[in-house]
Length: 76
Image: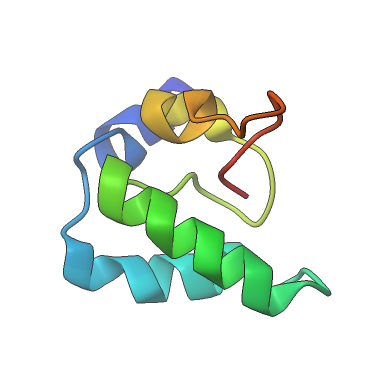
């Protein structure tokens, strides 16, 4: 997992890279529109998107710790 940190950690992206990274992150979900909306919102704030299609949020602490009012994960 440590191999992801250099390329995927907080601040590793520019905002212009968010749409492409979120397209990758959300490509396998049946809820594509909400995934893209929240992924891009999280990416703009955190400047990172976890690797892969699901999980791996621990490599981006901001993405992992941003929660909804009910305490659930805000970022897909």
